Image (spheres, rainbow, N blue to C red):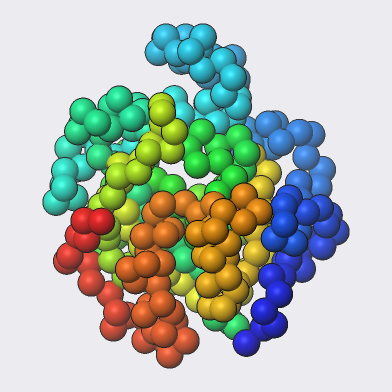
Length: 292
């Protein structure tokens, strides 16, 4: 197992800039990018910012959220999340913006499908990310490899073998961490379980998700998107335990996402045994929805 000191990733060594007391290298911007905003637009192949502004104006939210990062604001209005009931049946769709408003969450009508990826390397170390400072919910918290939502589109609504969620995970791992699709075969994501949780981020924003927990063991090349990710690092079990202690003590401003902490406290260490033993399939339970 690797040494206990938190390590930065080799692909990022060309831009070593620390974001805090954890001693982890900042995720570097992509070479040749005109700007983070321009790169993010090109990456997703979306419409122009002017078109987005029109959508925002129609929603009547431009003034209220004028301080929101432009890329995050665009995604809040363009992305349509999949609404489900507590049995994970699809009941509709709504904007990412509405799905994360605590006012809507407390009304009980925007429970939506989500996924959380736990990607391990061949040393059985878990890849963590620190969410960017511009994230609308839970900025600058440490969390698992990738956390996002399947969208209301044909390829991500496929129920059979959780294929829609797997497709979404592959898409977002490229969006956030620059991991190419060929390095993450969809059939190698192993769904281990589902959990339902609710968590406020601040007075306005929060999460209410039915979260698919996807595991994979694979060595990959990283090129993180700074609009999405502030920092990355691999950790072994002991290093994760140290991170938990720092978060519990409030040391160095370290915070963990609520969904990551729920997985750590309820499932992760037992599942990590299966990662090391190569028996992840035997740990899967996709019939149960854990209400946490």
